[in-house]
Amino acid sequence: MAIEYEKLKNKNTKFGGTDSIEVPKGTTAERTGTELGQVRYNTDLGFLEQYNATGWAGIDAPPTVSNVTGVINENTDSTITVTGSNFKSGSSIVVQGAAVNGLDRTLATTFVNSSELTASTNAAAVNYVGGASFNIKVTNPSGLSAVLEPAGTVDRDPIWSTGAGNLATWSDQPGSQTVSVSASDPDGTGITYSVTSGSLPGNTNLDTNTGAISSSDVTNVNNSTTYTFDISATSNSQSVARTFNIIVNPFPDGTSSGRAATSSTAIRDLGSPSGLYWMNINGSGAVQVYIDMANQGGGWMWLMRGNGNDGQQYGSGEWTNSTSYSESNLQTTPANGGFSKHRGFYTFNNCNAIMVYGTGFSGASSGSTAFMPFTFNSSSTPNSLMFSTSQYMNANTSYSTWRSVFGQDRTGQPRFDRYGSNSNNAYGNTSRGNVGCGQPLMFGFNAHDNGNDVNSGLGTHPNYCGGNPGGFARGSWMGNGGTVRIYARN
Image (cartoon, rainbow, N blue to C red; front, side, top):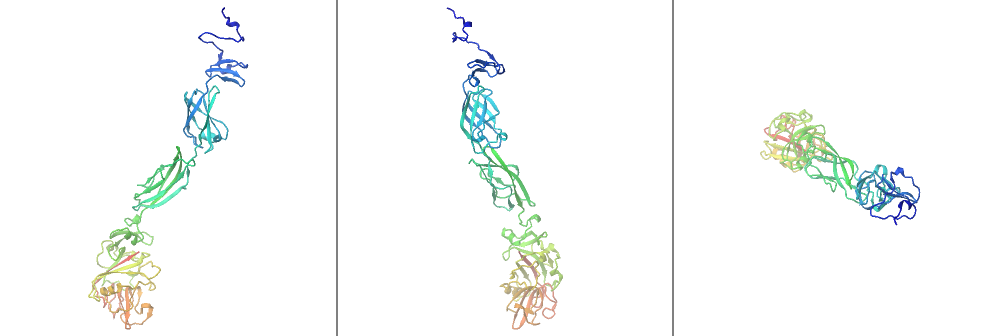
């Protein structure tokens, strides 16, 4: 007989047929039942739900969580992607575990499709624990959930070991110059480096893998230049920037006033040829001076010249003051000529040697031409090429050459003095009285033998050898027709 379904309420009802049955439906707000076992369709959530011991719960298949990609950093926001199955619109991603101090943190979640969800890590608000592990839980709107455990470890930022500020002071001299920066990742991930603001010195490169900053020939600068830049250390897409600088100074090779050198020897040691260079006189400014690199080891600054019969005798101010005389004559290829004086003759400091060039004098060997170097034998070096008798030059083998150029017949105990040398106080400062041809001179040798003193040199005294007129380089032993050039080296 036919079944009257309307009379079967609460009577272990059975449903037949191949179509469907209709159950009550409504929104979440329209729930009214509180009896265990009630069933309805939730139009807000889109699935059947039942009322059980915990309340209304969805009747649905649970999600599965298979993988998490992306990085959760301790303090930098990022996006993670969770993949799995049976995700729903309205599913949420929850971070669990030690990384959140055991407190579940639900993230703002975007439904992509049934197998993919994304979420912002919201690091600023969540306060993740760097280096700690975390789980990922996905909860569907039905309340059903799944957990991936463990899902990963909270990434920590790179840590700089190189302090901010100046890394190096370079010169723009050709040649290799290198300095390095260094950072590490606490999680052991590799670091890469990049310049993210500012600029390195010209022709300088940063090795992105090692942090080495190097140049084989940094671009020239006109004055001291500070290059400021930020370098970012990056690991797992997380970057930490730090500000550094490198100072580049003009190399003092003497090629311009801004690159003035303080040492003629240093210019020589660069392999520079003879020529005009800029030198810094006593630190008070740059001036051009010709430097001879070809004679007696090179590095000789040309500071004075004169003919033997010029009038600069012993004590003349031209020897002792700081004024230059026809300085331009000394700022070109050396040539003989009338008296000229470079300002550096008086003011170059720390000179350790002088060189006298002479030619055209009578000499002990009918006159010859020579470059004669002399070095200081004092532990301190004077500020001027004119100094007291307490600072002597070394008597050396140049004396025989000196005699062959300028002349002199005494061979015993020669000494080279400057400004105030007087053969009356000959070698060893032994007083000998007015004997021989000894008179003060500005540059030259004195010597004695058989009770007679004699000297020959530059800046001679008017009483030299019986009243011969003094001058730049003149006297009975020397004649008057020669010419002299004076050099110094520091």
